[in-house]
Amino acid sequence: MKRLLLFLVILITYSCKENPEKFIPHLNGYWEIEKVILASGDVHDYKYNPLVDYFKLTDSLKGFRKKLKPLPDGTFEDSKDTEEFNMKIEQDSLNIYYKTKFSNWKETILLASENQLKIINANKNIYVYKPYKPININ
Image (tube, rainbow, N blue to C red):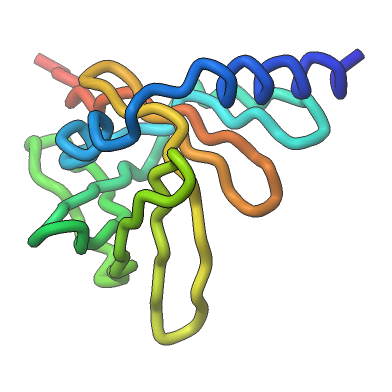
């Protein structure tokens, strides 16, 4: 049943494709993982995230992604690790090609809007992000 559900989610996602160029302006910013839909169909919900993903397009279709730790004062602790990437539109998909000193990999953006970001990796795991909103403890 889980495999059927995953298959249907992927089928619907790919059959209702939007123009991937529309996704590009929405990638920049701070994103918090909301859930991961594993290739097996299992869903892992995240109630709390100690880290936030920061995406920054620097010029044309090049940029970087960093993991940041939000601090109570509204600033971030930087992990010092930066994943540089190039984006390419290929066969109606927006693909991100990452390159670090340790590895290279590809992910595909399924959706990017002001309210949600969905990325699928080579293992067919779908990462669903929401915009990061700082916690106000006052």
